[in-house]
Amino acid sequence: MNPKPLSFSERLAFAVFRRVYKASTGFEHDAVVEEAIRFMGVRGFLRYIKFIDKFVKNTSAIFGGANTQTLIGLAALMAGCGYCGYGHTLTGALMEFKDSGQLHPIHPFSIVELFEHEDHEIVEKLDEMLSKPGYEDLRRYSKRMYEMFLGELEPEDEDDELLKSIIDFWAWTVECTIVEGVSITPENAKVMNELGRDRALRERYEQARAAERAQSRA
Image 1 (cartoon, rainbow, N blue to C red):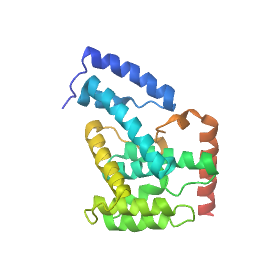
Image 2: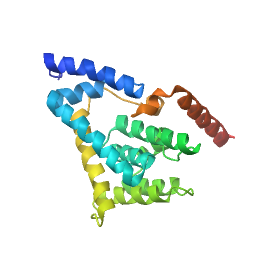
Image 3: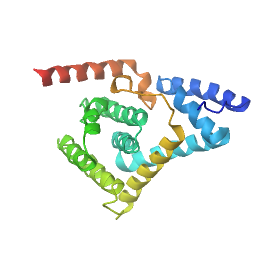
Image 4: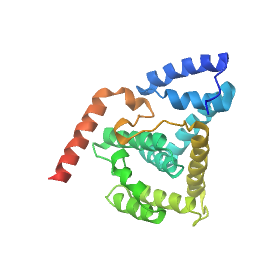
């Protein structure tokens, strides 16, 4: 079924926001933005981006920026969206690399194999991936978030409520932005914040990842 054509005001808004996102992230997010505008309307989309900006900032103040992006990416993957899943985990990995020079254990290529496992196996795999020192908080958050997603855990404190909000909000986001026929792979994951404009950082990161892959094959 062909998608509903955008109205004049929606086409105008899409033209503006495609430029805004390219300027702010260094990447085009055309298909997702167009579908969001089609689904929400112009006013609804404006309310959405205002809310998402505030939500990410508030969550980052509690969990940390890189952790928040990674958790959003995992929540998107739970909802079946590779676009947001790969994009936000890449964003979290770039933030970690910029701040510490370390390669984050959760990134688009490392989570591809998770799709081959059942839910409980994914929990175990994530726990294993995040066993490195320095990722204790993210390890705990991701485990509890997945347990809530599976209905095995009810929120027990404010952190849990926030994790549940990430699950619920990105499940809703995915429903509003799914575009039939559009697929994405780890190779073409798109950065979701301003770090995407930093080509030098991205090049250093990709070189470090390539060296990591070469070492793992040796």
